[in-house]
Length: 212
Image 1 (cartoon, rainbow, N blue to C red):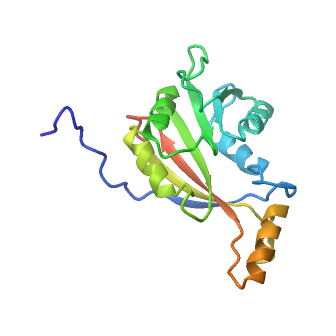
Image 2: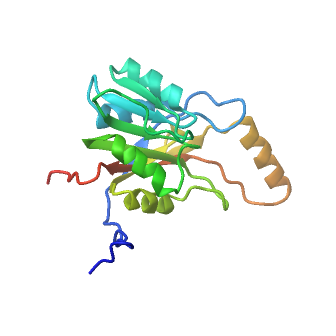
């Protein structure tokens, strides 16, 4: 029996397919975090939405996502995710695809509840989290827990390789900040970490079951 005041939390996640997508990065950014590669955005939009459907873009890369969506014949809507108002009006049509990037990505289930309500019955939410280190990093497991608490179903985990392929080697595309941090670390005799991939977590709308 479930106490109405304390509903049961979702059980442990089921195993999900793991895919690796090579996504050559765009030219290195001068400073700060490199933008999401256009190749990754193009593939997400092509795989998870149809022409003329709504693509909701959230986070620092929202404008970039919207531009790619327009190029692919979709209808973009930019979500001011930090704003307390309800989901922005998109008429009677909900979003077929949501692409969320930091800083819109959080571990707060309320954010995912808001996005879940914005999806069509067969809609897809994709959450992009850079593979960062440290206490402030958005760990995929915590994102999955928050999304599942909002009723979203965890469908797939994609490793998007943000690096160039040279033979059998991956070559990351660091920013100037990355290079400066690497030089400081090397001078101190510390290991150097460079971000070479982005975790893409894929969820389906509540109550939508993927056909067998």
